[in-house]
Amino acid sequence: MTNTDILLEDLEDVLDDATSMPMTKKSLVDVDKIKTIIEDIRLNTPQETKQAKAIVDSRNSILEEAKKEAEGIIQKAQEEARELVARDQITKTAQEEATQIIANAHEQADAYIKETQDRASEILGNATTQANEMVTSAQNKSREMLTAVNNYADDTLLSIDDALYKALTDVRRIRQGIMNSQNKNS
Image (cartoon, rainbow, N blue to C red; front, side, top):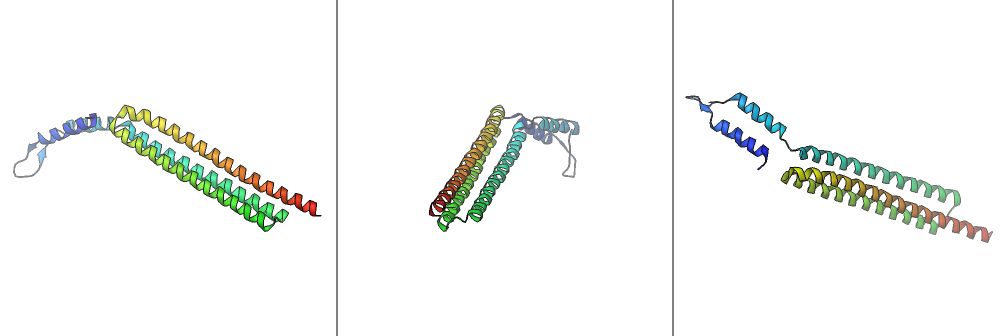
């Protein structure tokens, strides 16, 4: 039983011990004692509640940043692909390959974001459950889970960056091949 549970029982005892006023449903209670118990409850509110809120805020911030960065990378890759197509008049086959590469990059970015959200939700759920069961253990677990989310988000962003870099390299390779074939045909 936690300190808060004990204090709530004390509060119930004070109310049970209250003197009834004749001919009414009202009772006289020791106001000072109730105020003391309420203050003790406030002081004993588990730190995990505050930490769980911080984890939620941090998780949302990490996910939002990852999503914005992924969208920026995808947008930049699309712009570069459009510039290459317009400048070099890549053939229809090359345009289809570039479109497929961008679509794959979108799918990978969406999958990474979904995976990050699922993982962060799972970690948050575990942290909340453990915080209610064991105050001390929850404090340590919350710190570990926040570190894991940050590391996972960093790893995911690096993976997205690698995938987009590979996609851009493929587009450049195709473009170079087309330019070489055009130069040979000239």
